[in-house]
Image (cartoon, rainbow, N blue to C red):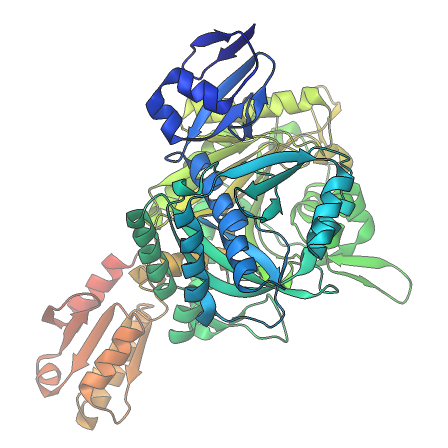
Length: 638
């Protein structure tokens, strides 16, 4: 007898082993029609797979996130891949995984294709779907599957198989009534009629196995959804996202640029640097109110320090290093914590000093693959608003609560009200014993529970030295951006000999809380630009007032207005070019300047300004002193 339990708590007994099709049908015919896969004891499996032991089973349908990902995987591996082989028989298939909202397939073509060929490929994909072939799964031994793909000259599949430690149970998926087969982890739809709506989106280069020493393949990206309405909605969001691309807006507003001489590093222009400095000042005020002390630590430190901290073992492949003439090896810091601990260690600490909250705007350096770089969002050199709190065990929970509350308050100041919180527990590769991890995880969870916060659990995704919380911002296009983090740590202090003297005169190690609100200032600025389409809040705008004169007779009055505004630290720009007024106004509007002040003879006579506000068609006249009051009241840093 076989006992199957379901998510609703119901159990059912069967006389023999059975597969997912049979289980779904035993529940209801309507479910069997919608079923696309199953989850057995937490593992996704194909409906055709047999269940031979007592198990917990969940039937997966297309209207779930998991079902949608399975459909996307099927579109990549069975529809796109077959369309490519039909149209380009001599092409070589590499890998075709799912990604967020879609999929891609890496292919070596005899002659490179362009996006102009996407309609041809999409048409062939539709032909394949309309035939509605069944997908047949089989398990093969290593020598069998090698023979299959060698006979098809699929060199990349052969490499994958040869490099595998597996000897059997290789999963092969074949479309019924065709000779098309693919090697895949699955699961797949069992019927191509269940494929929804799809669209190929872009084309990029990708080295085989991500190694620049290997041949360059072409990566075809696509997206797939349950129906055309969902697809159209997604494509609309993508179109809007392209308009909001921070790289385009950054160039249009003269904020920053990138160039190949410094890949992954930002060249800040005056206006962009104004935004950066304003954010730093904002955070300084917040941290001072919360009793943080600010420090600064070296950018380059000896390898031995990174070995002590554990970063060298876990992270050295992503570190920039250099060797000096005396054969010492130094590294550009990828994290701020080991340097910050040295400040803590610079004197004997007493328990009476704790909690000690120490903040740093530290520039860090991490080698990211060139293909992963993406404007401000993914760089190799960036600035973290880092802080480390040294506290007693009994102080840790209250400190965590205060950090969480401050984090959420900061995000509200920037208009982010929708925040996801993710809790990550111990990873497989970690330092410290389980007793320490038990204490840290429990305290971190209790701090969130005391605030009645909802959170998701990312199993095994904690830092190597402690569990963490991630704060994920949801922007105006419902995209998710992981920004703030908080980790609790009892492992790094002993490794770096960070200690204090307790009330009994004994040496103890503090709890070390790592936290960042923005995460990366560069990335946070990119998020702000895209979330606001470049129209930043008044207090953060690099230019707050643009002044346009009707003719040269107004130049003197405009210059005196500039001086008055600058006296009150209002950032302004006077456009005195010999251009038409409408042209100047349009230029200021394109630069997303919140207030445009127009000056003519009437304004000079009445000591006023004619004001246009960005995003509003209304115009009004106001005395200069009143306008200054209005600006000062509106642009206070939160």
